[in-house]
Image (cartoon, rainbow, N blue to C red):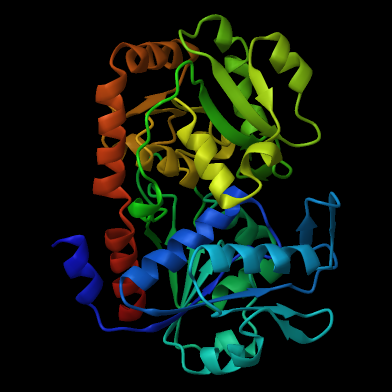
Length: 395
């Protein structure tokens, strides 16, 4: 089935996407939501974006003020700019629980939109289900942080109760329930899915001369989680064996590195190029340009993804592939589901990482073409979202 045929083959639905854009106004997180909105519209659906402040007073990140508080002013302006430039119209609204007001371009129509919706997709399960979304007949939880989500459901009663309000459950942990996978069973019937990529938004551009293998990463997202006698950590826990990699790499290596506790000086001394993630990914288009300015991605995964053999695959890495940039990334079990060897080069040790970088250097054009082909065959939003919507509506 062609992409054009796929967009016309399903009955149009009204779908509400609950996401994280006003509260998380940075380029990479914006693309997570944008791919769902653009992709669902490509399939012919009537799509709304709705975000909830939650009841926490520390809900909105403002990169201009470098604070997290309850003030959505910057995030609302950011969202308005993104929706306008992306041609997504006024079908978006923000519920500010702290002032009990609807805000955003579609504020006056948000309740009506929910009242006539068929399906809600709760990205990362990061929005509460209020009365207006809990009444939507089909409610899908999209787990983008496998193993950590399931541990939270086993240890946090409020998180578990939120999850119970959904009718169908999808996870980026494609290994869930398979032999060797240590994602704990939280009692929810998880189905595999992956990040959709709207390919037309990621054109393949020429690789600049001297471009590094690069990534955008947060050193620590939150504290280590413990379950069943095991620890599940962040990227900081994964990075140790690779600190000295620049001395062995045939290609320059760069980190757009976030986190107040990141050891930037130590990594720079070891030969890593260090840049500010906000400098290169403030807007979604900056993020896309940064990926296009690279020769490919080198990246470690969250320790929890690796040690649980979750099968998790990063939305950022999928964007590198779509841009025709080969990726040298830490194995989480994803190679059981995706073709590895050309364009996608997994590693589990420093020696394997060096060998993968050398392979990418020897045949750059072959690996660039293979990277784009993997994105087209395995991350195309028409296919990923078409299957997800069909399964969600069947439950």
